[in-house]
Length: 289
Image 1 (tube, rainbow, N blue to C red):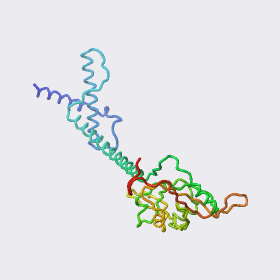
Image 2: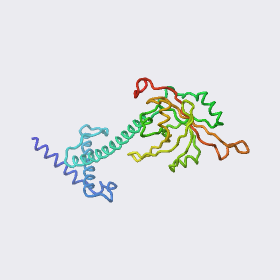
Image 3: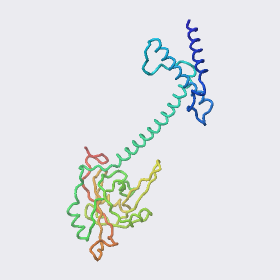
Image 4: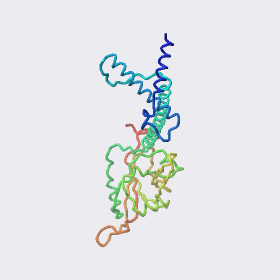
């Protein structure tokens, strides 16, 4: 009985495929289609005719029109073949889409992780103002254009003797403290000899440079660095990991134009190191939140 029913269904499906003519395929073929694509389209048309035939038979039995509702997938060989091909294509699209999403998420997490490691961690949203004793020192030197350049906690790499530099990542710099000419010189790997006033108000020579580091992603991470005498500054000021410091810039010897505006000579760039807060806890430990 079961084999007779399966045989009758097979004959019905084959008869529907035989009844698919060129008229049924008008506007449903492409010039670059291969025979397999045409076979799938024939199967699709046959399936649609099967649905229509099935609905008409039920309408005749019920003697009233039926709503166009989703029908059960036919279990014929052609339908299975077409469905498997379509599903394979969907799976392929989904696979590549998911891989792209994962790459984007992983890259975002990496960037977020890198940012979290280098994010400025002040104890308040608004950094404290420049101490009055530094303002007095700047005025005594004829300083102007005072700007807060960096507000950060010191890392192990900032205090490593083999590095001998204080790193100031460009993305954390708080002010546009350089002239266009100075920026060009630094990008060309030139050094700018300058003066640093440390936390004890002692003056000393130091060098400003720009370091550009290539990342595995192909991007470039750039930082300004104070170097050459930085190790001595650390020793003289007894700097420790997680000390909270500020770097301020100011200019001396600035010349004014005839109309009172700043001329081409903005003066020499100088820096000051302010120790805002000592690290809490033992050496190497981060301060308690």
